[in-house]
Image (cartoon, rainbow, N blue to C red; front, side, top):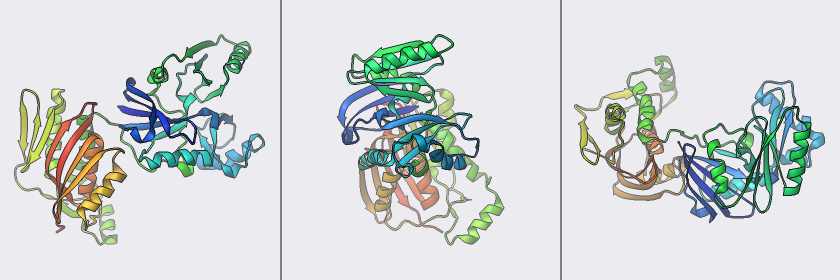
Length: 409
């Protein structure tokens, strides 16, 4: 699984750190870089300074999450430093004592605006101390030249000066009924922080600030091995082609929509579906993939494996209304901006009024295949020629596609 971690600093500072991971292995860490130079891949975790947040717990005898969220400001009002209407309350897993992270709405919005300006779409956003390593009966203290971050529990911790941290840590040891180990980490190099948090990358995020009015609007895909992603995405197509949708639901939807629901199955995706099991079984990754004239080839260093679709594509029924695209190039440009990850080099060339050639560099293959399926099912835009090459990072590719706006019959 590919993950990008971006660490923001002052809410008015456009300089950030970012690191990329394959599972929980650090691939690279770049510090003090302008945010417009950040290149995201896979899921995106954004860290903000813990100093702007308050991490606390609250006891409310309610299990319904929506009701609980409404009650939190009232339960904490005596301890708030600002009016509740100006604060955002992010809630963790509801329990007897439920963790809550509080931040000013204006500060959170400033960070989100900064990310949006640079087309960065975070999947998770949390205080930086909550990504430090954590274990029961153990305090983790991470100190740099400016401050110390201390994580005292799964959803607990604080930030402060070095002297205050030492005093609090000693008091915590004294109050505990059992020994507490202190894991003290002193930063020596700029990338020490990213090495330290590596074991946490594959673990669930304890609290995501992107909830309620600030909830992330773009769904994510956590599959990053391109052949695994083929299988997962093409299961949807297989379900469609085998008519597993309820006939009653389809009938109801067809009567309420003016668009046709019948269109040609995509040869490109059909062939991917047929060939993916063979490639997966071989436990090998192709260096290149080509598709033309209903023929799909996976190319390795020492061999080429191809398959051609026999016969014409049959019409299938889906639960998606087909919405006709008037300007193919303009639609593709907008769709890429909304659906794929940011900072991709894109080139679109018109072939004719109904076809374009699209080139993308350094794009996640699982995002790409999902997007190809979406534009086919919803808009009858079909890939009829493709060249796909692996890039440096696992799961990343550069591609050239020819996409045709098929007529709806």
